[in-house]
Image (cartoon, rainbow, N blue to C red; front, top):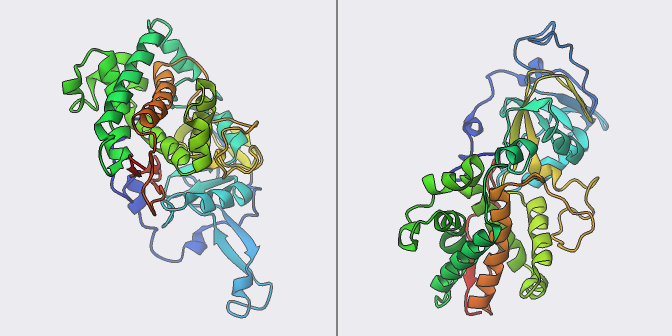
Amino acid sequence: MSDEPHREPGRDIPGERMEMPSGDPWTRLPSMAPAVPAKPEVTGGPLRGGPAAPPPGLVRAVPDPAAAGVAGPPGSVARTVAPSPLDPGASRDPHRIHRTLREEFPLTYDPLLRAWVLSRYADVAAALTDGRFTHGHRPGDPACARAHVDIDVDTEALRSVTERTAYVLARRIADRPQADLVADFCHWLPAGTVAAAVGVPYRDMMRLVRGRAAGALAGECGGQTAVREKALASFLGNVLSDPDQVAALRDAPAGLVGRAWTESLRRDPPVQIAVRRTNAEVPVSGGVVPAGASVALLIGSAGRDPERFREPDRFDPQRDDSGQLTYGGGFCPAVSLAGLEAEYALRALFTAMPRLRLADGFRPTAAGLITRAPRSLIVRPGG
């Protein structure tokens, strides 16, 4: 994962604006039954007997009731391309596409992503730590943890800095009739915490939301303030959208807040797609990923896999099948900071604004393809 700047809607990655080649695409796409792609023969280079690049897409043949009487007699077969996470409308509702991929195309090649796509929890979770998948970085993974062995992190000092920064930011908006927590709080807390931790005066914090202060604390991981910002926005949106959760978490112990944080990372991960590359053939639930291939891991899809989570679309901090794939389980200052920021964000906001609620008629709406979170959280600080 990387620290990605804000982008305009529909401009998350360059591939979004690619156009398919001219002509009839069906003449170039092999027919394939759902979830049973043929095992490719790999010779250390291009697929044997085929082009140097992977095939342009995997296709399935399915009965299409809508085609009856139009394209042919009842029960006629229509050919359907596996949906892409970059399809039109995916930014507004990726979950429908993810569901189709999990159920019918657990392994498929996406010409827009130019990568093989894995969408099931078991496959994505394995790929994030399997040594046959390379070229990736996730805070908390073993390689990350080893990089931080010699870093002397004073956890209590970080806790104090995070708490102070959160309260300063909360008090700045407490007297307003209306505020946007994304612009006025989430945008500043992750970078402000890091800046304060490395001794940047508060008066300079607002212009130091990216850059050397973040890197000085935790290198590549600490610099990922945009990821923590998006994760925090989704977390606050999930909590504030449910009055029962507001009541349960208002004065909750750190353990319960931590469970809610993990649950938000599962349901609405800030990074939706992580890219890896294989250095060997890898069997997965939908077939075999060839060696030397780019692979898109749909973290957003994996977190809502009903084979792993009950009622996966529901935000439930009390669930007994919890888990998340945004962060690994090893020590990393950035992972610790993210959890502290979530905890003290809630405490500071509810302390400074006991009647804090979403503005009338407002519901958080997430947007984004590679990274995803609400772009605004309009609240009434005074209730």
